[in-house]
Length: 122
Image (cartoon, rainbow, N blue to C red):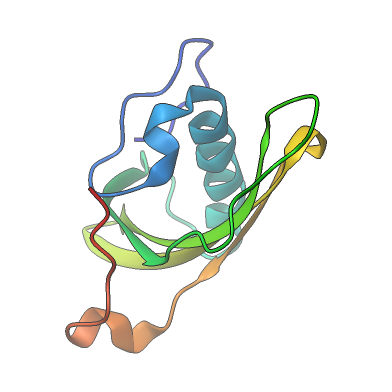
C-alpha cells in the first residue's frame, strides 16, 4: 500500500530487502507512486501485492568511517492497478553515505504469463 504518512509504511509482502529499512521502504514507495500516474489514469489506492528479488546483491562493500553499505540489487514489485497486476522492475543502487539511487520502470510484460527465475533469500 502506498501512502504519504509520517510514520513508516507497513511492511511489504514478499521478499523485498527494504522491509528492514523503513526510510528506504518509504522512499521506494514514493518513487513508485510518482511513476505510476505517468502510466495510468487510475486514481485509486495503489497496492503492492508481491515483491521478488530478481538480482540479488552481488559484492557488498562497507564505506570506511560510516559503516554504510555499497551494493546493488534488483527487485520486481507487483502493483494492483484497477484489478490488474502490473510488474515493476526496481533497481536499488546503495552508494554508502551518498544514499541509495532508486530506479523504477515497467518489467517485461511476458513475466505475468508464466514462471521466471526468482531468488529466495531467507
